Length: 181
Image 1: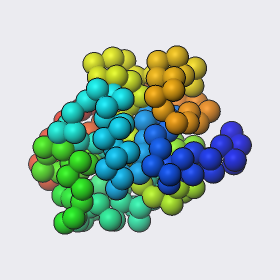
Image 2: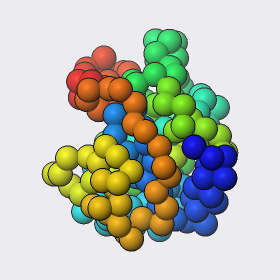
Image 3: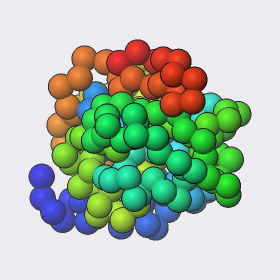
Image 4: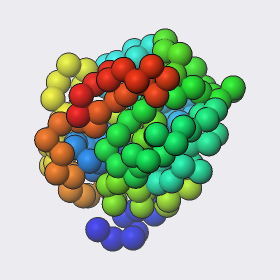
């Protein structure tokens, strides 16, 4: 991985583009979470409705503060790591991030390259699996290129982590496991 690759990916995000990058389990599609046009285009690529909501990943807790009202200690104790939590969104959080849900899904990633990408972009990023709706997520650089080709603006070369399944998603308010990891 070259630093220039990360810089270029961050530049594409800042210009409103869609990128693909490696995460803990699969390649993800990402963009600037505050850019409605980018998010709408990403959801169009995935063929997924905005009502489904999205996950945000970050390099550190500070990058999530614009989006969440409070981060409980039990959540902080699991990060960085492959644990996605549903938290109360901060007032003013864009509706396209929560979709039809009362909470926002967030994670401080332990995937080294994904964390470096968030640092390079200086923000949390949208992180949704690189696939069309109801299809298996892409797990390699070549697979992303083959499946999504020119639909994305840049595919960051990288390797996915060693998880056998997508990260778990747990509601921090109710404790309910929404998606096992």
